Length: 197
Image 1 (spheres, rainbow, N blue to C red):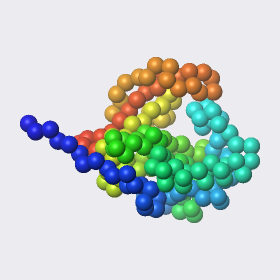
Image 2 (spheres, rainbow, N blue to C red):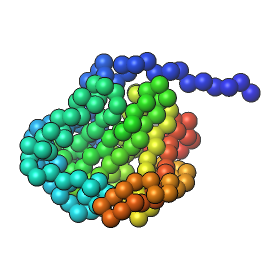
Image 3 (cartoon, helix red, strand yellow):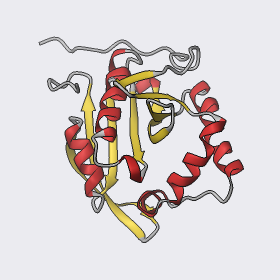
């Protein structure tokens, strides 16, 4: 059987275009972050459940604006991307993004969080599915990885529902607020037979 080789992504596959707005479902979409999102970003990182896994908080809206603004540069340099998950009124209710983008290897890591008021409605799962679809069909990626603490059962449910196969445990891999955590590793391939909705 001949070896199938995916075409290489040329440098500039992300940075030469505008970061897209992506539909998720009626009343829910993904868009790039903007200055006006600072209060929502600050609220997110003040949430104990989010901060537990990110060990970060902002003391002012100005700091949150710097966080939001840095994503444009990371998109341009093709190292990472982040989208606000927004409701029908264009208010952020969460985040989904790509970290560690390696265009030459056609891979990236996925991340996500949802504000407390928006939890329990499948928003993270659907946002992950939307970004996964775009990553495979438009950005030309082949592999998306996803890691979460073994103690973070909510993230595990999102990963599983979004079709990310569990591949193993990375021992003592990431330090969170309460110390070193083992991390579940999940992944999806563009060639996986189960496609996200």
